[in-house]
Image (cartoon, rainbow, N blue to C red):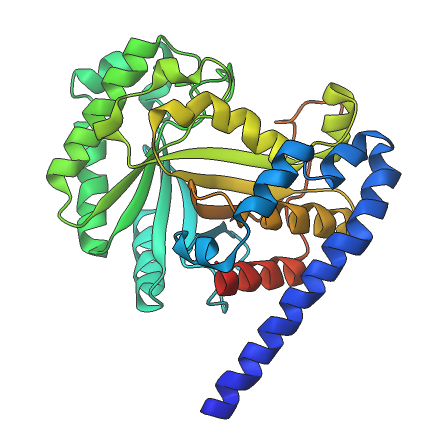
Length: 342
């Protein structure tokens, strides 16, 4: 047994060393190829101030004080079904139309493996009453839906992460009838759902309030007592970045913009959807850089990867639909590395 444990540790240490070599030698070359002079800022840790701060804090005692990060994945094709590195399984359900029997069976199998559920509840309207969605919720017209969901969660009988009405802060009405609504209507309905399920479900619920995180997202904030975490998606889509920003954004650039918006809410953060597209080499290098930055961000307590091809057209008609199934080899090695050293 000791020999086996030693072999595993040596393998993990080798993977960590491989990651660091990839990051500090190959990553700068690739980023300069992609971004030219724009890459220099990212290579130098987004500027001398961040570099100095990282060096100032990079002692092992500080690192050990940070909370471990819980890793999860949305994995509809079960690429990681035999892995133990992901401790949370992310599922999306239409609350008015989902296969209850299949969801329960899947949840119980995950429970046997000591894997928790994160369910993003998408509140699509009954009978296409999109304009009346929030009014109908507050009038109790969705109580039957909530009762069925609470019964299911009680049957599962273990802690669950829940998000309701995600990405409410962007004008996606054609996709999500709850987005870009009047803030008070959204907030009142969000609180109604949270109060109902907290009362009806006997096992623990951790609520993740999950905006896209744009400049005015805080107008949808339901209050500190209605959220245990703030969720945010972070995607690297090089083709789209070049169109909108002129260069490819690093993890730090994306995260810092979003964090500056919501940091005053003083809640821990879970990256609820993380995806990378582009060439496999680029994915490796972008992820390696991201993990080194994440290593020192205490506010991040969870990262849930989105491991699937996206829905056609949701990123615009003039770009190829992104495939977020990044290199599973580098993904595993990075997760193992961060779990070992943080």
